[in-house]
Length: 389
Image (cartoon, rainbow, N blue to C red):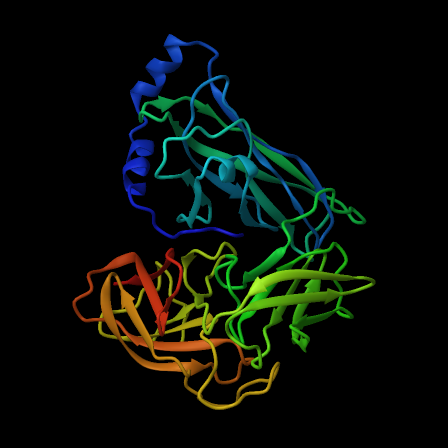
């Protein structure tokens, strides 16, 4: 899911307005009966291991709507990647998302402007069905919806649910957004040498596909319907344009750019935000029920930190520690944290970076403390958290 968590001035004001929905919303609904905006999500038929777009659309019922907030809940066997819809982009809004306890995904569509969000598609969730999923039905639900008008007044918002029919032999009925995304954050942006990327493209990518970055072959980690995960070659020159050529039965070119680093932290879920892929000092997975102690060391796993201090072969497992060429720093809960090691993750493919960080002793307990890393001047997107006891 492509979710932008980059902050904008004034965004907190709008989010607070969204959370102020209370009895005023009920009074507003009584004053104008039947004048309720609605959010709808499409039903889909998708095969195991396949993916498709299930558009979320707004019908405002003639009201001015400038901000939206709602939760997406998926049944087991389904995951989503989030892309903004045409109406969100046309109104200059940003898409924010974060995982909530229990696994639902909170989505906020908001901006620093007071422009109305037009009727139509506001969100494009790319719905994936697990390859091991059995035939039948699974659900996607929109819950806890709220909306505001440009003046901050609440707007009644009614949600709907969708049924995903899991059926062998089903084919995609809509084309996912085409582009190159960081495999950890699921955000578009410049590509760095050694970065693990998710390429969204044609509907028939297979293991026999080839992926070239400016003519350099990229190791393919996964290829399936409409998607491939690959590792940008270490020889990719930072700066300037990049042409990503994906070849199956035919070739497709995707334009991108290159940068020395494009760091992002892997997360436990599939949205690029929420609990990070972080190990505690005893090598167990960090979670709200298995929090790390202040003053202990945690290991974060990430990608997009650029070149390493010693040459590494594309697509090969790194046998031992090799530090990053760029200096790496960290903050936990807004407090600067000491980085003990930043480099290749021994035993994993080149492109996966391991950062060992000492949690500052003064950080208070927090089941979702924000964590941030930088590689040189490049920072990881906001939205990744660690649990501290």
